[in-house]
Image 1 (cartoon, rainbow, N blue to C red):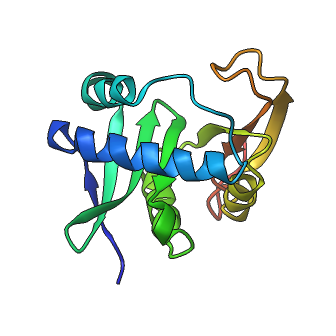
Image 2 (image 1 turned 180 degrees about the vertical axis):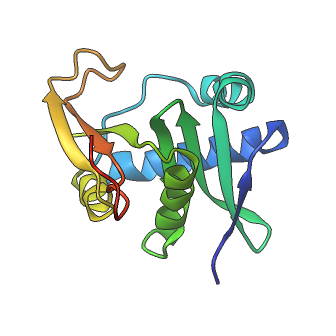
Length: 160
């Protein structure tokens, strides 16, 4: 069964933040990402204020439960997380399809160099690596990778 995806709002902030925290905790235990620098309550407050007020929150639901989140901030995929027990079931791909639909000119995102699973996922979805950094500009101070997605030129359209 495919998840239902809808635009999230203030009523979803707590559940979205909790899913984010669970997914990051699982990725941390797997060694895919570095430790976060914010306390759980700070993350929940950030979702309730900044994310729902200044970004686009999209949520995937299945059987009445939140199973994935997508946060778009301008042309950036700021967050894309799936419930750790439900990865590999197409939820992330469905959320990424929403991001591509909502940003037809293209997208960018950052992922940590240690998160090779995320890198493979994004590359399967036509994102290309733009550059690598030593992490000095992110909060975790961990080496990261900038990815970009640019849709292919439509048939009959002259590329610029």
